[in-house]
Length: 393
Ligand code: MCU
Image 1 (cartoon, rainbow, N blue to C red):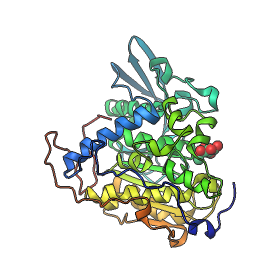
Image 2: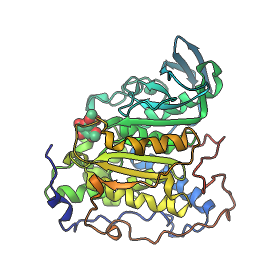
Image 3: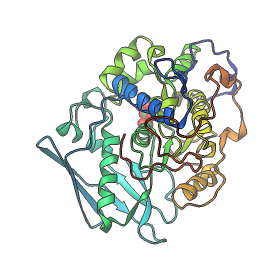
């Protein structure tokens, strides 16, 4: 990994970095209403599952849970087979039950906020991520044949269990998800596919997380060592084998990129924690994805529900104190219902990247008209809160 210099940010990007338009259906029809966005979001979900992540199974036949000794034991039965997994819960020393919580994908790498419980999800037990030999290894695969939505599926089952296990003393309407690096990729996918999560906090997730495949390819093309799709599919099993055809030929054929994966979180809370000091993480790619994805929150009337902070160089997954106030603002708004300033969009000390946003996001974000479609919508765009009872992925 090389330290970044400012010269990286001012090179002329001439690779194919225009990202797919969030506001145009595959058919060419335009997204005009919030109901249209609900349909477009469903289309993006399907495309991501088909081409990159593998299929999210329908809700299983049964999810049962018991709570003892700070361990939430969850048993899932489907198709005549069962698995059990057991997240542990660390309770805060302050506050009142039921507590808000953060589900940590492989634990958390941000400081534990006061008054917030931490649910430690052993994602490697659900689906291993050692290297290529990890394909199909883990409890998820006892029940299902597909691969990389395993951790998001596990988060969904934790949400099922919380809702039905009052002994666990977690408020199911105030749960966030977080993880760092490879587990930051998992946190983003979990937030995208679990609408009961009110705040998603991917940290230094890099390629396959908040980066876009297209901009990462352009960065490598211009000579900076950055992780790309063609490399990532050789390193590990984070994505489905269907993704290999795009990764090995051209990511420009993908009908989505990760700004749309992030857009699936909208208008719920998303706070992206990044840094600019590690080339391999593709901070420039993440920045392009973030400014592009932000147009979706803006179109839904919830621009401050999504924020991003790219700190100066520091050790990978250590959390710099410079980001503490920003993290607090998101935690306090989404887990404690406070009115805080979450209008946060910054890169290392306020440094702004030189490439114009239009290079990545050449669409004009509409102001979506409320309702207006046959399916209707239950989102509360202005407040940035999710539909409270829906469990549809
Ligand atoms: C940023 O996440 C990954 C990265 O994609 C990998 O290439 C590298 O090997 O590991 C990173 C990570 O998870 O570090 C803890």
